[in-house]
Image (cartoon, rainbow, N blue to C red; front, side, top):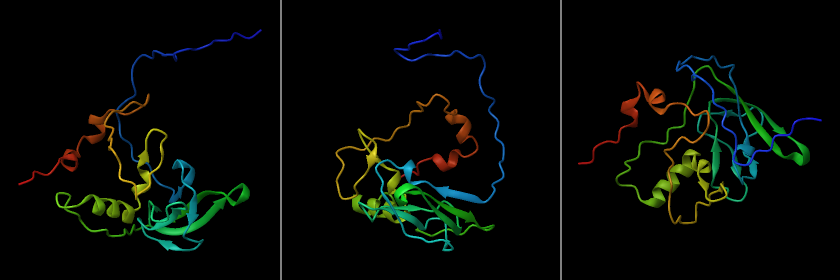
Length: 181
């Protein structure tokens, strides 16, 4: 008979040592995909077709319930294929990257003068509003609903999370808040 181990409050496996903090440069094979299942509560509607040229920041698909929420391409290139599963469910949109990356220019914004509506419009335009989740169930956020509170987590609670100081090393200036005068 097999040994059965029942866990009630999790199990801490104590390992000696820790991962080496070393950055390595990985070569890309030039193939990228955006997977709608990575976004909770999103029903995708594809807005590109195979063979379309896209820039980094162009919409690949939108949320069917809220068409103003678009999901942007991470790279510029050519849409290789829209992979569909059972009942034509969109599994991913694949993009072959160009050698030289082109980006959509959304312009610079002065955060000190933006209203809440302008911030929402900027996030929607850039295709990053879909990365904001509504608590407690991590569902897709509705841009027309005014939130009661906004929580920004600065805590690394994942078991294999990297050391933040190591990640930021050499890029400290990019993470500094500009002084307001």
